[in-house]
Image: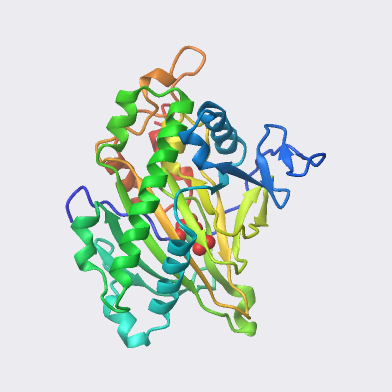
Length: 351
Ligand SMILES: O=C(O)CCC(=O)C(=O)O
Ligand SMILES: [Fe+2]
């Protein structure tokens, strides 16, 4: 594996609930909004119109993104530029892949964390006496031409559809990240340095129906934060994803054609802790299988993951030292922590 192919963690441990304060919703207009003017889906989940970043309300939208990152660590995006047809196609091909016979899927199984594509399967954690029942096909997806030839050819349209989706999501991710960085006050030079050789890692996820008798001790995925700048997730309509809000895990309500965005650990570091990465987990159920597609965006390997100089002054001293993504990645695997505690050893105050 070259150093440009650093993997993201897929080992998720259960974590205690933390606390976050979220302002109450205003319900006096047709579209519910919160105190920051953020539109709320189902009264709880902020929604940002990504299309507005290309028009005259760009600066308002950038402010909204800042509020969503700071106060929620999570938001949904609409008008993200990915067609409904493509969203349906990628979900369809993901279902088709996981409905292939087991021996066909298992050809891609690999316990090797450095593999450029691998199928991971459910397992039992004997220490905690729980099952984690997710099956995932994980692979690098940007730059596309480096990886597409490693992807499966069964189902026959797999490469075509997945490639089209990954390119479209990458475009949306970069638009979004640039706007978030701009909102933080980063200079163009810093933004370019972080994103010039950025990567994308994709995980097609399958959560099988769980036998009723095992439901209590089976997770789809245990509580964790993502070791990314941000993650863009396409969930299907089956409930399962839960995010931490006000110290409690809350089920995310499906919003048709929206993508779900999580602030990741790297954005936490780069923002000098103005934004915190989001704790989330996935539950399984005994009635319906569930599918999701996660796109993890990570920075150039040599990115300095401490806050850029322009975010630091006497009133805002640096919380994190300068460290590279590569160093972060090594610590993450060494310590096997499932949340942003992975960043703690890079704090200025750390020994
Ligand atoms: O499947 C989901 O809804 C969430 C997946 C997730 O959190 C992850 O892959 O990191
Ligand atoms: Fe996650």
